[in-house]
Image 1 (cartoon, rainbow, N blue to C red):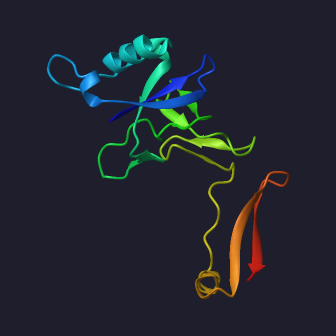
Image 2: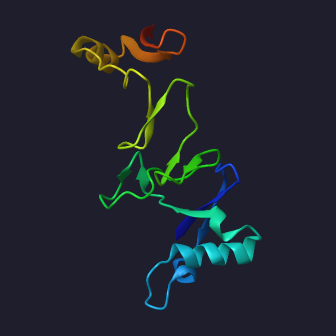
Length: 149
């Protein structure tokens, strides 16, 4: 099955539909996004150029079967289509966060959350503590929390 995101004029994903691969093959038997777009326009009364193919197997620019990732992320309702970078972005979690084009995900302006120490990892593993980092938008910091079980 091929997957296509229906996007609004503002490039927001409104829905994701599946199409039989046989419905989007060209004369040489090769999948064609353009044929899929025309098929969806005909059957859904939505402009062809507002249907963008997406890969069910792609997340954060990694294909789960080791193949070439396609468009950064599998599109979901509320995602944003970035035509310049050819990436579907999940909703931005915080105003200050920026795009990481290589990983096709948002990151804080100071980078990703810090690693846990070996002691914190061990405490999480044996269940005596639950260490977690939470983004503090006001201070632009990663704050470590410790919730005891």
